Length: 315
Image (cartoon, rainbow, N blue to C red; front, side, top):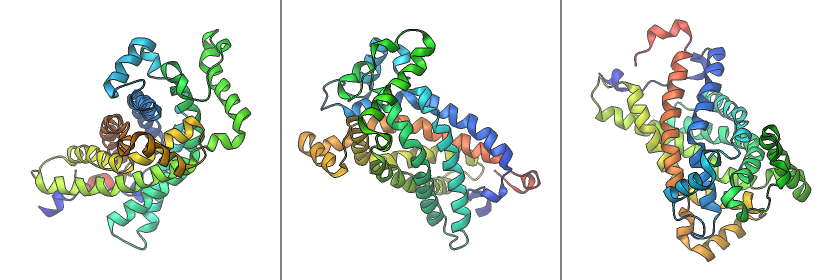
């Protein structure tokens, strides 16, 4: 009975890597397309002063939809798709570090914490320049007065020029004002946000999955328990790291250079409640993300399991 209740973790050496990466790209793209509108809304909420533009998550959603249409909810999405590269780097780093740490410790919490933090470090080094550009594009439309860069009107000609011309326009402005360093603005703030977020998410994910497995009937499919554990872990990690995420968004969008000064000004202007800005949007976006990611990722690993191991596993 105890054997059946334990959540079995598929490790790196159990996977067929060709299947793993092929299915992984499709899964990552699906997740990003699903949650991108919530990511855009979260960014605008975090950057605005008080409630100058939107009163909350749902108010922002309906205002953007009404004034900018569905396309407004996907501003910067094409640029953001390049984070597929960082997504694959994240997964690979996580699995490889778990394998490396297992030589020194069999404690799953230790493996998850170290691997999650390491994976985020690698991924953010790739993601930050993409985020800097995509966030500037997210702020166009209703939020353009909150950012330093605005699209030139001459990019609104033909469709190809509109899609790719906006990206080139923003990149040229960033480089002209800040140079190459401008594409890594907020890098430290991103590391301080996402390394703890990732390091917290994985241990809590495995913790919640195990706790749910002890409460659930013994014949309950593990995938259902994992799908429930994912959002719980995401909500926990989002709540813990949201203050730094607010600071990160302001540093990157407003062009600030000091994380500490940005934090102090936020507290001075909006009090400690300012540290919760965008939290509901973040949890709303992280919940479906976590469900899709967990179900997709665990299914991906099962589909990528080496053929000779399939019959030895019980789900």
